[in-house]
Amino acid sequence: MSEQGVLVGAASGRWVLGVCAGLVALVVAAFWPAFNALYVSWDDMQNFVDNQMWWGLSGENVRWMLTNRLLGHYTPLTWLSFGLQYELWGGAPGVSHAVNIAMHAVNAVLFFFVSRRVLGMLGGIGGEVRVGAGESAGAAREYSKLVTLAAWLSAAFFAVHPLRVESVAWVTERRDVLSTTFLLAGLLAYFRAVAVGSARVRDWKWYWGAVVLVFLSCASKAWGMSFFVVLIALDMYPLRRVAGVRGWFTRDGLRVVAEKVPFMVIGVVTAVVASRAVREVLAAKTLEDWSVGDRFVQACYGLMFYVKQTVAPAVHSPLYELPAELNPWEGRFLAAYVVVAAMVAAAVWGWVSGRARGVAVALFIYLVQVSPVLGVLQSGDQMVADRYSYLATMPFALMLGYGAVQLVRRAELRGGGEAGLKAARLAGFVGACVTAGLVAASYAQTTVWKDSKSLWSYAAQVTPTYRVLGYYAVTVQSSDPDLAIELYKGAVEANPKDGRSWYAMANLLRDRGDVREAEKAYLAAAETMAQPYVARQNLAIMYFGQGRREEGMRQIEMAVASVEDPRVPIKDGGPYMVYALALIDAGRKEEAAAVLRKALAYEEVRGAAGAKLRELGED
Image (tube, rainbow, N blue to C red):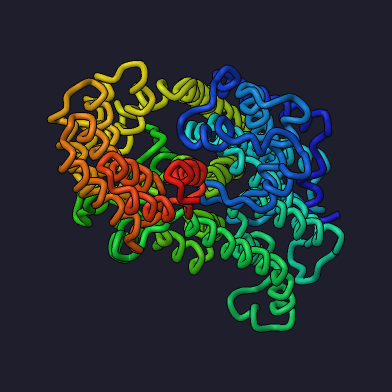
């Protein structure tokens, strides 16, 4: 049996089962408040409340799940999981949350087995396995227990860290946990398919199983697109299937590269599909919106942010918003440049010196996994996001377990078994304290996701940016319009170009009877919105209601011109209907009929336009 086999096989099944049960219990404790949480107004409404296509697995529903790109994401397998959930248990928010938590618990267990396998390969001091054929079976069992406990520490750190809350407590992000389930299972299958120090695949069934699992992961979310690079890094260390850089140009090295072709094809196709889905909803930012320099600064900040939040988790928010104007010399960005430079230096030194190759590979894998969400291909308004850490920061959790192994082994080498035992107890005590603290922090953070008002009122306290204030205003505008108006005022003060807040505030001011302020807000919205016709249409209606016909006609004519402007995205036929009715009231029926014929091109007003044409005798 190989050294790796001794390490991972020595611990009893009952011992491992108890460890896994402990991980599940920790996950349930950390995320308990989510069992009673609702869907929140942060994509959940569009995905699950206003959308019925996930209600079961009918033929129509399945076709939709396999083809839709709702909100810029192509995640067919995730939608199928929701459909299966609905068939089995229904669509209540508590059920959706419970499934998310269960999937995350599975990931905790899978990551435990991944950590156990990797730590077994890394072994003792300097990365060399110290338990081999020359040592007793008892020593092998003791070392296997040490590796098992260290792997448990890694898995617990990953599973109950407050950075996980967003992916677990937000129903929309089931795609995170489901994609990771298949990716971790694929990695375990790959470990079964290959052997340490051998360039040949030893079991092709496990190899093709890994390929299928990675495909399923990418069908759940695009995170697995760069997985083939992760496998290449692991082939170098700790699998040691290729000896150094020159080894890639040998026959064995080329054989190892050829193995990655199926994974690479899956990754490239996934990347293309994901980028098209983003472009379809106009979520991708152009270089005019967000320059190359801005993206570089954002990428550096993101690399630092996830490390910092992993080591010292502080404030968490559902939206860390992109600044309206980015200053690359701001203090947090200067710190990011230093941290990124230090990480690169540590990785290079660790690999070149041969003294910390595990650290070098861990940092490289972190970079590979987080790179798609660093803003190079920016979509949306987020600078960073807690959910992006779900998969990317696993190497840091593994490094924690490796550190515990090294602590105990060094103590044993210096002071014998008794010193090793004391070190193990110290590591266990510190690990238990850290885990308890993380469980408490995650429990508290999960309560924030109870409902929309709870989520956005909290976010408005910790990150009061214009988008956050706007989202909070949306949640309270029906119950407390005065508070909503104040929140919208704060949003436009933070960003005067926030057309959506200007528009929403104008509607509330109009309903409150504050016509003068509503007029100002509508005009500001028309100057800043991507679809200015919306604001001009409502302003025209307000003018008509006040008897200000000339001003109303001017605004609705500008609204129609906006709809006909090819530069304006996402058109609406509403302005044509309002304009036609105004023309009819003015006795200009022929002009009204011409406008109504244009309105027929828009499905949402086609019926009303046809009916009005019939009234005019213009069938």
